[in-house]
Length: 353
Ligand SMILES: Cc1cc2nc3c(=O)[nH]c(=O)nc-3n(C[C@H](O)[C@H](O)[C@H](O)COP(=O)(O)O)c2cc1C
Image (cartoon, rainbow, N blue to C red; front, side, top):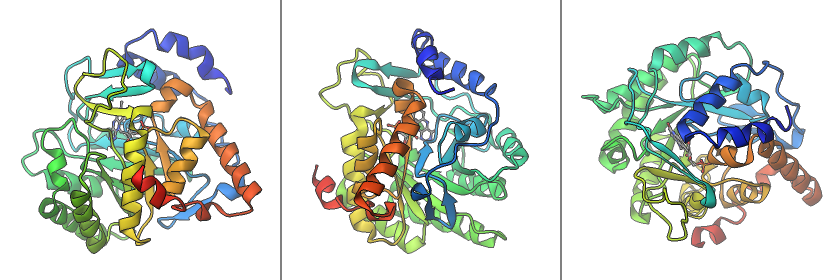
């Protein structure tokens, strides 16, 4: 299993990005459901009332319909976020809608929340009997008349099966979705979601996932609303609409959200800025451009209690997970500190970077 991706990559990269993804999902369905590898105890993270065996998660969008989350845990992720899921199935945008920016180690996607809706994902999650941590990322249908109600429906549908919820108000590919980051809309959204969550018999953490393309004034407002409404955490960040000038790939002008290496600096800066504003009121998940042990460590030092990745799997394969874990574990041993001491210790520096 160790170098499985080394063999598969040349074939997968002959395919269009979406076909390659579908082929990967199909292959992963055949992966034997083995027990995940035993992680070094110094990588355990206790947060959100959950015990994560290691801090590296699979970001949303890879396993949209909750089909291969067990396989991804077997490959060594400490947690998996499925979705984005909308109440009703929807096809998303026309193809082509995903592009590998190979010379830049990036990806542009404009999928537009293609997914099979709540019901099949929920049925699969209900069948899962193991103790792995599975977050459910929820969104709104493109044609929803009451977008907020779609999020409320998500909390209702997955309450018994989600380890945590992610409220995705930051995908660039559903027109108007990002307006939910505005203070008035966000206040109403969070009030309604948290009200329904608090009526349930079990407490499921609610995390807010934000865009990297926010001004610091907008970030001030979002963190203020998040703190006053009592969210349990934030995920920073989603893909960017910006196009850094250094991009070389012929696909660089494609519409959609950019992820991978070219997103690293912007998403790390906004993470550090968020960390400084949150003042330890709740933890953060850092995501965007992690593709090596070093970038993983920087995310944590910028303020992430947990991290997630997606795009780097396309270029580095799943071997990257073990590389990051080994490096992190050794760093902690060498420095003689717990993982929690790395979190945010360089936030001021990366907030300016
Ligand atoms: C093809 C693709 C699809 C994505 N779909 C979603 C999604 O449905 N919901 C979501 O919240 N984020 C989605 N994302 C964003 C990722 O979860 C992540 O925030 C972003 O890609 C930055 O991480 P990375 O640079 O490690 O990929 C998607 C990313 C990619 C590349």
